[in-house]
Amino acid sequence: MGFISLKNAGYEYPGGFRAVDSVTIDIDRGENIAVLGQNGAGKTTMVKLCNRLLCPTEGDVFIGGKNTRRHTTAEISRIVGYVFQNPDDQIFHSTVEREVEFGPKMMKLTPGQIRRQVDDALEITGLSREGEENPYNLPWSRRKFITIAAVIAMNTEVIILDEPTAGQDLAGTRLLQAVIKTLLDRGKTLITISHDMEFVAENFSRLILMADKRVVEDGKPENVFWNFEALKKARLTQPYVSRICRSLDIGGNIIHLEDAVEAVMRRALRPHKGF
Ligand SMILES: Nc1ncnc2c1ncn2[C@@H]1O[C@H](COP(=O)(O)OP(=O)(O)OP(=O)(O)O)[C@@H](O)[C@H]1O
Ligand SMILES: [Mg+2]
Picture 1 (cartoon, protein in one colour):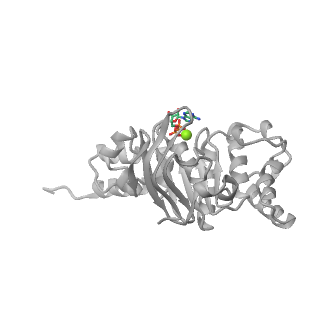
Picture 2 (cartoon, rainbow, N blue to C red):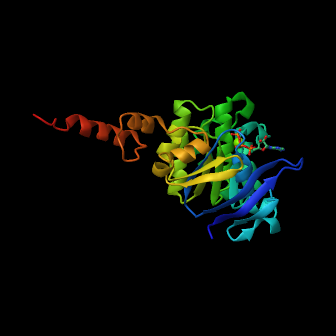
Picture 3 (cartoon, rainbow, N blue to C red):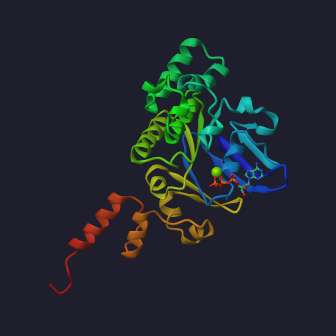
């Protein structure tokens, strides 16, 4: 059983709408996973089962061996931190620093630990100089980083990022890339929802594709992004690099730009028959 384990887990919203149906996945410590799928596929609902914001209405979810049915959201939130899709659903303090220190304070850490974890989280997310700002004076894309910092400051084993790439410019995307790398270097387990195929191809080691409430594919990016049946089911496209390689008839399941350049150069330098 993985550190996070969903066993035939499903979720039906109170009005009777089923958003997740019979999902079985195992996630180990230190994994770096991207969850992909069209709008409404059930991604957010599925990850909310992983941090006990929602309790499954069918099947079971285990976090670190704990069945989420038998534990409170407060208990599970010490293990799994969740960055909401919309930062404005999460921010309710008048300064960036107060927002980021809220979680560690709730965890009743010592003042010294709180200070260290807040400073660390602000630094990683490039917010050290904005601690006294009102979050709502900063743009939406920066507010997303405030919520990321708030979760990093809790120092949970698992961090879920719900669409962190949405609305980010190049600088924001690069910062996000650096944040992910830092967290992985620290041994964290990451689950990230994204619609950005290029970002996903460059930054994750396992992809979970969802379509119509279910997981339709789960594997390494180089396999998933060349599995046309699965991509069709999830109504997703390959990253540009893979699309270019495909149209040039270059095989090898390429998803990274450097590999594509190398393959194109190899072909260009290949001696012509007949010379
Ligand atoms: N609170 C709710 N009550 C009823 N239905 C809901 C609720 N929240 C979500 N849904 C429905 O559940 C389905 C899955 O929603 P979910 O937010 O999990 O999808 P998603 O894959 O995250 O989509 P997106 O990419 O748009 O964020 C959608 O049809 C949505 O309308
Ligand atoms: Mg969502």
